Image (cartoon, rainbow, N blue to C red):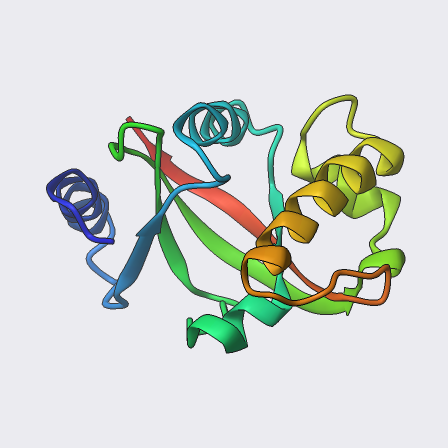
Length: 152
């Protein structure tokens, strides 16, 4: 979703970096405004440098997969632009193969793999249930790494 706030931030960023001619996506983390605020703040603190999403949903919703080099404007819970990130790595693995390193890079909770699995299993199970799909530890997860490039 490219709202006025996202376009304004992107315009300021590309004015400083005229060599960038790519387009961008604008989105927020999580399932609700409070989560979006919390996770965006972790990005701004440089604690969150990774995210994970339910791979099956890309096919079910026809959303394009992220690619290395993609730019994103991160929105907070009020749908206001707070940061610009660039995707540095994308991998698809079964849920059970997500590493402790990735869990730590997501920056959430106590940053352990146990915490990550607990929170994400619940989240992914709910997402897939809404699409009438089962979730298992073999369900595929899209892991994305990113770098914070710009913020107000």
